[in-house]
Length: 188
Image (cartoon, rainbow, N blue to C red):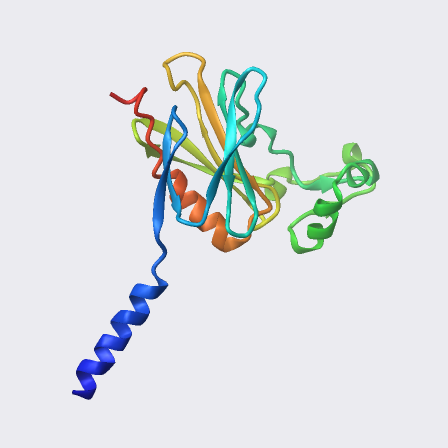
């Protein structure tokens, strides 16, 4: 009897800790996210934009159109001179000591292996019927996490979907959600 009761308690505990998910339909695509994440709308100028607010109040924003950004093409090394340091945001300056970075006197007179200090890493994965680039910060929590897919319509339509300065748990859930993207109008 004790054994049965113990198993029942373990099963009940495990079922209560499992996260529930829902599908958000943005019209152009669908995504499965944790049940307590909610969609929000933004007004775009030349593309369809919107996003999701997480349970920790992080904003995950997408840009679906011709000019969606590929974050990995903006991957400047984290090597700073006094001018570069002055251009960092307050949040970046706060997080900088926890990152792999380098401060130099003069960027042009420094012999540095810049590839060692890149801000982002990326990998390619198949999502729905597309080759997608999943982008994460080299230094956890410092920078953007997301996805970029080029040529959704075979020409010039792309999507960038990013969250900034995400903690490990949110980053993991976001990447998991991104892998569920369905582009029903483009993958038939």
